[in-house]
Image 1 (cartoon, rainbow, N blue to C red):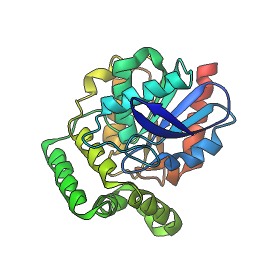
Image 2: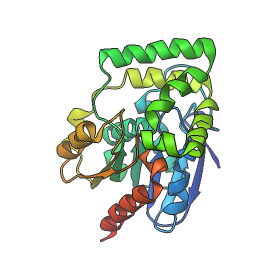
Image 3: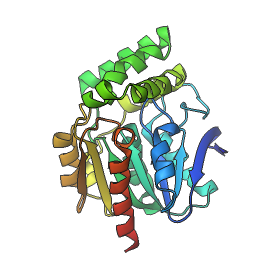
Image 4: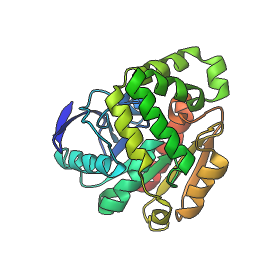
Length: 265
């Protein structure tokens, strides 16, 4: 399905009925990251997964795409879909967007699920690495971004034992357009520190992290989120890296299912 949002055509899929659950993918990926959740949670919720601007089948405008821009897109899509409040589930960059959405549209948030993400802004070194990658992608297309990310996205156990999953993630990243990758990198590089936001979050929140995540380790970033947001539960999934929802979908879905059921209780 497609919606015209803030002058950009956004692609999205939805399945199921009930209270809305919106899934926000990470970089440099698209809505297909969430296939195990779209199918696995549709009996419990109205599951919506979108391609962020610049990714998947959505339009890719030129220039930086900030986390606030993505939040604005998401809010406009909710209006089109006649969703007043939703549970937001964001992974990695999707978590940055979920936190930006909370800052701007807190009244529209029923609950938060923050997966393999962090609140802090980039360090100077990380920001410079993003700008360096922008130049690489400008010169060589999507491949540098895909091959830089692939070893870091998946757990060592996944890379050794599940070549089919490794290949599907590689293909997903390679099909993303350079303009979207560049826009996201520039947007992430300028995102603000969301740490001051965490104490203000007053909706039920779940943090899910892969035990082998080397990008946002559970023992640092996971604990920081869970400690700072009042009442947050931290779930650490064994044998999973940064893409915990894709590497261990049954465990991920079980955690989300349990969490969503508490909202109805």
